[in-house]
Each structure stands twice: as C-alpha cells, then as structure tokens.
Length: 206
Length: 244
Image (tube, rainbow over all chains, first blue to last red; front, top):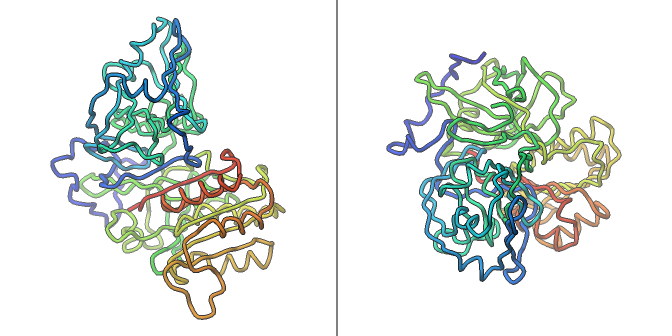
C-alpha cells in the first residue's frame, strides 16, 4: 500500500555510507559507537564459576571451564554487525573460538538441525545449525583487544554476524542441539525467527 | 507464516512541544490497533530518489486512545530522522509507520505492581505510556517514577506528572544533574544508590521495575536495584544510545 510513497521535504543524507554503501543492509544506518541493548540487568559472572556446555543431540555433552575454554584454538575475527534497532557497525574486532571448533569436541547426532544458545540471566535464541557452521559463528571473549565488557556480553558472547545481533547471545553459557526449532526470547515476542538483515527480517512475517 | 507487520501511512494530527528539544507528534492511523504501553513504532522516511531511513520511537499515548498514537521524539542535532520530525513535519503531513512492536518492555494493568519506573531524559516516554494507561484504567497499582534530566526545562511531561501525582497517588522523584532552579526541592546529582533506595521504599516490596534511558544510567540503575535485592527477573530494561 505504501509503494511510491515519498516523505515531503525529506532528502536524506547524501549516501552517508559512501564507499561502504554495499555493506549497509536496507533500513540500517552506520554508527561509530557500540550501543547496548538488553532486556534486563547485566548478569555478573565470576570467571572461576563460568562454564560453557554443549548439550542436547550429541553423543556425549561437554563442559569447559574458563581456562579450558580460552585454551581452545582461537583467532581474531573482523566482522560487520547489524542490530534490528537499525544501527550497523563495520569492522568490529573480536577474538574467540569458532562454533565449528566447539562442535568438533562432540559427536553431533545427525538428527540435530537447530541450535538454542542459552545464557546466564536466562536469555535464549534459536538458530538453524546451518547458520552456525562453516566459520559463520564464534564465541568471543575479547573485543578490540580487551576482555569483553559485561554490558557487551562478557565474559563471553556468541557472535553470528550475518544475522541481526539479537542472535549473538550475550553472556552465553552453552549451545543445545535439537531436532526441532524452538523460538527463543525475542523470537517468541514478535521478532523474526531467522533475522537476516539483508532480507530485512526484523519482525514475524517479514 | 504470521502476517507481516504492514507499513501504513499515518497523518499528523497534532504537534506539541514538550521541552526545547523534545516534541510530541500525534498520528492518526488507518489501520490502528491497540498497542501495549511500552511498545514502539518504526518510522520510515523515503526521499524522492528512493533513499530510505528508519528509526524506532516509543509510543507515549495509552492504548485507550483509539485510532491514534503519539510519539514523543527528542531532536538529535546530527540526526537524520528526528530533525525531519522537528524541522519539517507539519500537521496534515503524512508519514510511513508500522507497529506496534516489542513484547517485553510492556506493562498492562493485569501485570499488577507495584510499579517502579526509572528514566533518564527521553527514556521517560514509554514509561509515560504506562502511567497514562494506569490512570486511564483507574488502576490502583502503586507507582513510583524516578526521572533524571539535565535542567528543569528538560523535564518532559512536567505538568502532567505533577497532575498525576496530585490526582492518583503517583510518587514522583526527580533529579536535575546540570543545573537547578531557585527553590528546587528535588535531587541535584546522577541517580545513585540512596535515590534508588528511596524509590524502592516508596514502591514497596518486590516491585516490577522498568528502566529506560542512556546505557550508563540503565546499567547503574538496573545493577543498583539487583544490589538492593530486587530479583533480576523483575527488572526490565530498554537502553538507547542517541536515536538520531
């Protein structure tokens, strides 16, 4: 119904993204800052009690403590991120371990097709397993060469840069492999089940 | 697949300055449906060449106001969408919106209380929708509002909050962080633990807390309430950097 609508007197910024225009998904604007969004208080997780588990449809689950987890093969990642609240940030720098390397520590049941990431504080988000493998996703504990701040998801957060950032669960505590899809926190509250910024999958039905 | 949340073309029916930098815009919606207090709408502006910009703005009006929503928008000087609202938009203009959106930072009378609402700057907007809904529904839920602004001129909805405090028992605590007028009886510093303790005591045991504002304020207030033994699951937050 809104095809062809033009906002009277709106010129917009002259392609603020410049050379980066091809890196900014539709409806997004570039930010230099790093806005924080979360639904509740920031959980404070002491490192000596921190754990990360892989459970669900695996032959034998695995749980790492902080020392074990940060000793896994890790590397630097430089990725663009987009939040459903409309900001996009280019070239964010993280350090962490790929989900591929985490899954290599367990024997994944072939029936597993979905993943629920679950967090300290109770947050959950759901992803197809195909969005988590082939170096598309990692668990980071450093941002810009410094320990990841609690407000940004520290001690460790999942990062899935090709999906809206609510899929990148802060304070992540583990991954559960599942045969059936199960909507997570925002996915149960009207947000899109997959959340591809390039297809502008913001809300249910988009 | 659920139905998509469709864009619709709203008409501006009223514009009211709240403070020098904050203005409320009443929009008539052809496909209105009742929102829940605390939800927001997305706004999309389109330039003649097709360029589009989107932002989210909280609804300030209560769901009981049929056919309309009112958005209260702070003008961000370097912004792209908020200056358009403030400098260009006039009554009778049309603007593309879709909503309501958001299912967690919401309150409705059935959720009960007591309500402990904490805001920095324009973070008071979604909380005002809750207070207006509480008033419109004649809810007896006790409510406390703790707000922080820079100066007295920056206090949004000041007269209406005074009226609500007089009429239906809303307990208002205000702090001005930059300057205070002569005779100011509120606080004159950033929100801190003593202020949170006072607000918590006024609200009563185990309130439902809603905190909205700049990230640092929200972090401090949410962590502060948890330190004061409010269960984290009872504390809902909405944080923003500037929404330009």
